[in-house]
Image (cartoon, rainbow, N blue to C red; front, top):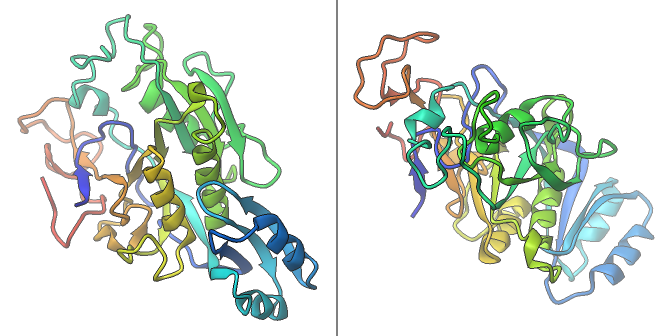
Length: 327
């Protein structure tokens, strides 16, 4: 059963006002998923020899396949290959972000085993932020590695969103700036969105594939334990890890979860049921919705500050589950 967290809790960062929540297919771009028992290199070489095939990403860990620009004739040839499980149109995805600065206080980060905010909290856990990258020069963030999936931009955050998310997750407990939920955690910058906060499903799958690769490289010290995605696009859960509706992102996430990675994702911020917003809709992830909290404490009654919502009630902009608002 889907686990839903209403607060800005654990690691995810939910919802920004007015940000586009989803986009349609990217013209001419596709994700090709192969049967798991075939040779990726063999099939890839044969497909690349076809006219009208320009490969962007290859996937070896979370699933077996590749992303490419395909001409109509190449698309027809690839789809007719019996070694291909399915071909899915690439889709546009965008960032979602936090609007609740009292979130850390509200989840009692200062009272948890991480001791956020008392000057001594420190957590040795590997967390991947799959986003716009992270500012690795920021003194409040412990960035130890990462991978670039957005074409040609490395892992540096030229947008600010990924760094903001990283601060909510793991800003150091050093009396400077803010403190995160898991202070000083080892952060891995997985850049899947451009500096404009926009990317493609193929880039997201690249990020998931890299996260899973850390658990298959024989080095347990870099195993990603938790990954955050405060982003999303249109889609739904087919109840079959994407095999029924040709969803490569869902299949990759299912395989990653099976390998031991916990994924925390944002519900989105259109004020609608998130059943049509992925990755929030996937049953295998922890989806975080947003609550209106104006003082960082439970109980309600605080006067609103930046919005007209009611303290301790659901945030009006937040997406929600199963057709109801949950409190």
